[in-house]
Amino acid sequence: MSDWSPEKTQVKSWNEWDRLRHVIVGRADDCHIPPEEPALDAKVPEDSDMRGQWGRRPQETIDRANELLDQFANQLKARGIRVDRPDSIDHSKPVTTPDFHTDSQFGCMPPRDVLLTVGHEILEATMSYRCRWFEYLNYRPLMQRYWDEDPNFRHEAAPKPRLTDADYHPDYLSEKIGVEKRLQWAAEKFFVTTEEEPLFDAADVLRFGRDLVVQHGFTTNLKGIEWLRRHFPDHRVHTVNFPGDPYPIHIDATFTPLRPGLILNNPQRRLPEDQRGIFEKNGWEIVDAAQPAHNAPPPLCYSSTWLSMNVLVLDPKTVCVEKSEVYQAEQMDKLGMEVVEVDLRDAYAFGGGLHCCTADVYRDGDCEDYFP
Ligand code: NVA
Image (cartoon, helix red, strand yellow):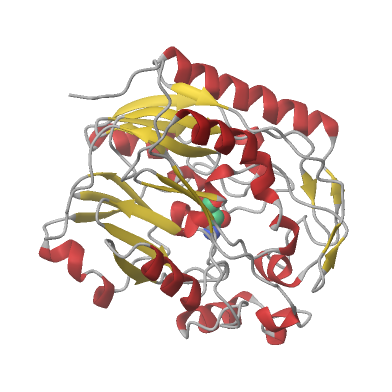
């Protein structure tokens, strides 16, 4: 029995799959391609059309992405899910702190990168790019509203990082590194970010009830994971790596839990054997995700073609899959999931797919121990 009602704001979500009742969907308004900065440069592939570009994204692409995001929000509403939207700040404004300066910001997409919902808490991540330092402000009106309306809501913010040059390995910033070198570094767990101070993006974290699974990579360092461990003392926090990924940022096009006992894993970024223990001991199946339907990402997109597996689970039997990702939809069908098709590819450039562009506010269910 669910105690959720649309009239009453409640914040609660313990995992990635219980029945979704209330969600935030991002907006493409005023999204910018930010100027060069260390962490971002290391993330953009050398042959990407993003290299050397910056400024406000073309208006027609913003309008198209907003049309698709609105359409997605309406699809969710039609299924009885409450949808809230952020209020975009002015991302053309430069950011200057005592420690760094950047000429513009990023956008209010995607919310999953910034907001981590764990139980009754929404935690604003430290972030690791300078252009995303103030991104939480897009969501503050919603956070204030939840705080006013739900007496059990815990609104938390992780310590803002200083993001001086000491946060980034200068080796990563040399001209051309090449994919082979990047893969070798990723296998050695040598990433662009240093261990100067705790850093994490919310999208590096997956929630499995009592367990949090966190990717160590470009956007989340070991101190960031230790910060999460101390912040959530009732959780077990597991560090994972996917050495096949030359640009390890955000876990949600790599490892996708669909329901208790079943996870999709990117076949180019398999979880190493020595990190599979808790899943294997508890009878969880980790299956290779289907191939993406596209050979390349859309123009001006930071993400890989593996946004195909960046799906949003609505309940353990229902999943939203991007409309053009026919192989992924076919696999979901075989796995016994009802597929809801969502047209979102033209919004990918704004920071990701269906999981990325949302953030949980309420899912049914309680904090279970799936790995006893
Ligand atoms: N590292 C990811 C980001 C996905 C949200 C990628 O495959 O592009």
